Length: 100
Image 1 (cartoon, rainbow, N blue to C red):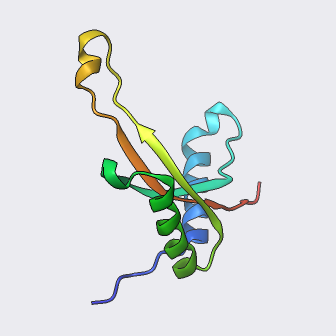
Image 2: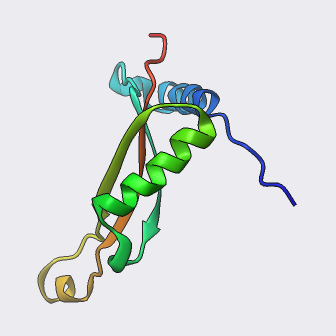
């Protein structure tokens, strides 16, 4: 069974349109970079792994971009902070200048 392909340019335009529709009341918000990634186990959540993923995404999608690593964490205060597990995401930052 083949995996369906996602056109990153079309995805970037769809994201830009959604942002414009939902955040218009806050003024112009431009989406110049689309971040494609996944929550990664701590052992592989590093720039080297992100580079390997980015290389495959770029080759398969026919685009250029940069590997990226980010951290997501839940909001908590006081003693609850000790129980919040940060999640690392790795992926590919695809630069796409949409028409403004």
